[in-house]
Image (cartoon, rainbow, N blue to C red; front, side):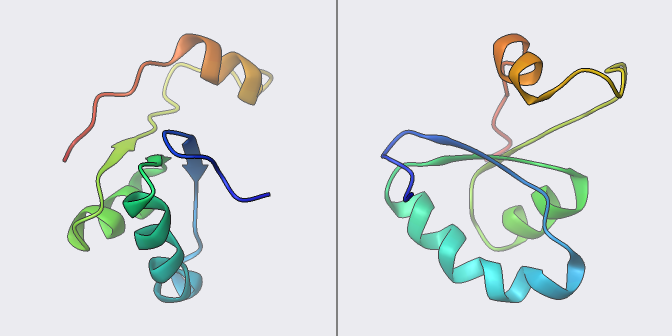
Length: 79
């Protein structure tokens, strides 16, 4: 399904896929979606003028899942 406006989207894109992901990221950003990304993906999105909050997994146990993440994480946008 296509995200709704103001959705939060968690992304971690492989280096070889970032260029192909960029048009989609721009489209979602224009729709008002907010990105949360791993360090490398956050850097790439920032370099391409797409607002993103960096997900820092430091301190989270591997057993904590995405539900825990979204219920306990308040991103601070870097853009």
